[in-house]
Amino acid sequence: MSGLGIYLGLTRLLAPLIPAYLRRRMKRGKEDPVRMGERLGTPGLARPAGHLVWLHAASVGESLSILTLIDRILAARPDLTLLVTSGTVTSAQLLGKRLPERALHQFVPVDTPNAVSGFLDHWRPDAAVLVESELWPNLITITRDRNIPMALINARMSASSERGWSWWSNAARTITGSFDLVLAQDETAAARLQRLGATGTKAVGNLKVDAAPPPAPDGLMGDLTRFLAGRAAWVAASTHSGEERIIADTHQLLKKAVPGLLTVIVPRHPERGAEIARMLRDMNLDVAQRSTGDRVTGRTDIYLADTLGELGGFFRILTIVFMGGSLVRVGGHNPIEPALLGAAILTGPHVHNFEDIYRAFAAGKASETVTDAPSLAAAIGRLMSDGVLAGARVTAAAETAGSLTGALEATLADLLPFIDVATGGTPDART
Image (cartoon, rainbow, N blue to C red):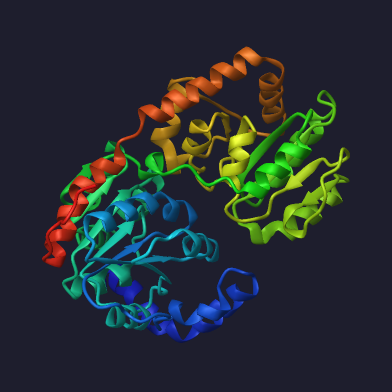
């Protein structure tokens, strides 16, 4: 039996265990108890009449990257409804606030035959558009078997992922070859996908570069202006487990030379806030936790912004930004937003999710790579003490980020005709 056949058989066999698995995740805050049925393929909304295109974006970054794309598709096709799925509670909350009319959100079904089939039975999409690297075998093969046209956009494929898929070459060819359209983030990803079996692959750029800047909540901006007055501060954005301790060590090294220093930590997953706060307080740091309304005082060491949808405010106010997920092997996070909003960018070495972007930043001297608390503290110290260096880094970051734009228009140029063919429709506008 092939590797793909083994996987499909196992998911069918183990499907009865999935509800218990989801309940365990729910206890950790990783599933929405009210909407658990959606994960098992039971719809939470009625299907609207008419043409419907399904877009799937796994998590927060992917979801935010397609918001402008969604607006443009709906403007071009007023007859269309978009069903947007994602897999995390955080992404669902963000999309719930920011999706326009004629765009509905559901949780993506788990990758079992019954869940995927139940989802498709109800929604009956005219086409499916998957974002980045969501190559779930049941989801893709069952959709393909129903003759639903599929596109993979903003596609990425790291070197390690290619090596992993190459062990299952037949499965890789079946899955990547199921897409009628593949639009990759860069030439490297396009080549890797082609080697795995994708056809019709084209490199069009990274949609995350063209994403609209995140909003800046008025309440947050007022708070920051008030308690940052006269204080040196920096932000560690989108941090993951294992990084907050490094950030805390960095703060303790820096505050010896920078009186009144305030370090802001914005964890990628806000539900980790209580756990992070306990760890920081065990290190004898004074912590103000935003989610619990703690007041920032002159003695506060760490402002823990464990809230949702406020990162744009921090990027607008603080000019030194460390992008998390890069001191641990998560693969880094997108530096474009803070770069365009006037920040100097620091990152760890593990940035394979955005390797072409960080390569461009390094070439343009628009970012600096650190490896641990001492090197991070040294880099921040240089930026805080040398205004010329900080200004040059901010300018280089904005110029480099600006030079990478264009993916949105290139994606639309191929995706809108794909949707038109799949729905049998014709565009009423191209805005």
